[in-house]
Structures are given as C-alpha cells and as structure tokens.
Image 1 (spheres, one colour):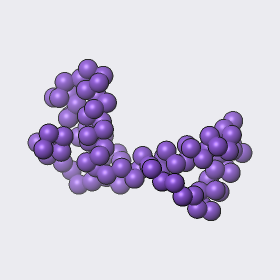
Image 2 (cartoon, helix red, strand yellow):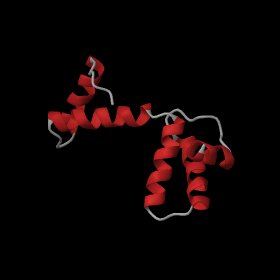
Image 3 (tube, helix red, strand yellow):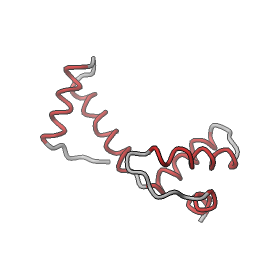
Image 4 (cartoon, one colour):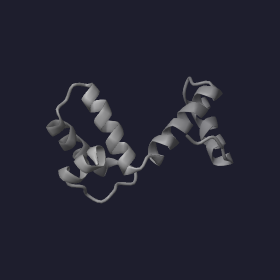
Length: 92
C-alpha cells in the first residue's frame, strides 16, 4: 500500500474533509485505499476477484465471464484477455 502522501493527496484529503462527514484520518485512509485499488495489476485484480467470487459461491464459468466483463472498466484497462488467459492467471 502507498505510505507517502504528496501535496496533491493533501488537497484531496482536504476536499473530502470539507465535502463529507469524514474526519481527516478517515479521508486519508480512503485516499490511500483508492490509490492502492487503482495500483493493482491486472493479474492481481483477476486473482483477487476470483477469490472474492469463489467465496461468494459462484462457479468458475460464471466467475471468469464476470471478470472478463469487469476488466475493461478498470481505470487503466489491460488488453482484452480470453477466458483461457484469465484461467491461466489464476491457476498457472
């Protein structure tokens, strides 16, 4: 996770404190969480989502279809990956 805050992040924290009921500490944690979320590689995203969806009781068939639909909506979308490529990320 990102530990260092820059003045840009301080501006964002200040904005969240002014525009939401969050305390400064809560706002800083939200900013760091969001930055960490968008710093996740496509492979890390695929593995994480697979774990989450398996824990929710979904089958691999449904899981890989869903992940394939979610990937293009990421902030920095990877090139399209086939269902086979997604399976290889999870299972090697």
